Image (cartoon, rainbow, N blue to C red; front, side):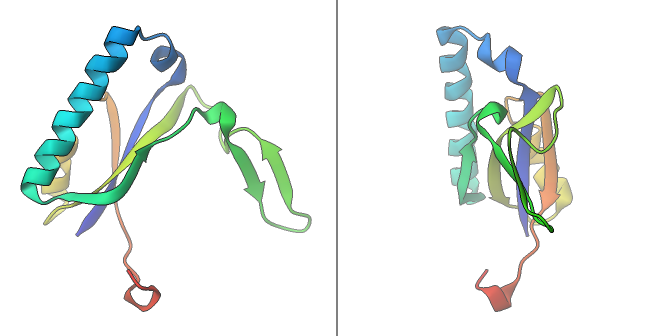
Length: 117
């Protein structure tokens, strides 16, 4: 089964990291990705996301509304996503616990074979 690992955090804390702290974090993520590859659990497509201040939100309706900024103005924003393959939720949670981030939401991916996935 496929799961999305959604990484949340405080953008101000992310932005205040030193170059060394950022490098160490990237190295931890590199080790995490290597572990996923070794298990055959990494699904291509996950990425770090740009800061929420770069987001544009579209609210479909009559009329359609397009606004600068994220959908929700909260202290913690989604900062990245991994897509993984795990046999069940317990295995996905075990993988998520190894991520070097304080908040990780684990959510099953809904598959639609009729749509090509």
